[in-house]
Image (cartoon, rainbow, N blue to C red; front, side, top):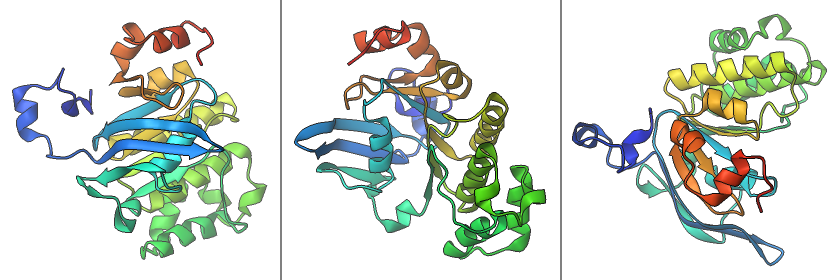
Length: 254
């Protein structure tokens, strides 16, 4: 697995010798409360710089909330985030990007949405913008208002805008949940291409088939706690927690 080097159970001495001293992103004792309820509870997590980690769990488990905490969109009530071993700051957050289930786009043209991201990161470049639009199959619709694109096209535009920032870490929160199979396949192809280009992927999904297609590792999160964080093949073949076994068998997991 691409991101196995940070697991003591499957790291060889050679891998230990070449792995970086710190994970790309780490959470220590991460907690979040709302309305008197603990929604994220003492999460410890290490994400290395390679591969795709797919986050799974039952509805209401806190998956989307965890992504927002890791990305710094909301503040935890306890715990800390570390980027390459140092406290998370604004510079580190600028090395990340996020795509939501419902595309959040400017009420401007497709091209303007990419230009905005490039200018925000001081990388304004018409050729790069057109290359990104071509990459997601939207170059011919560059001047079309983003709100007039189809749902799948809007999500591809959101993904292109995220990639325009050249992130080291890309969070995706169920980006294909409301899309048709053809659009889902296109998004998955783009995500896998980003992974091959060295972008760390953290992807939330309820779709077991999608998780098997994309994941190098599975992070299983029932009830706001990490029950398993394991290589995908091992998780699907030999889950170690009762919650994961029940989930994979289709049982209700609380």
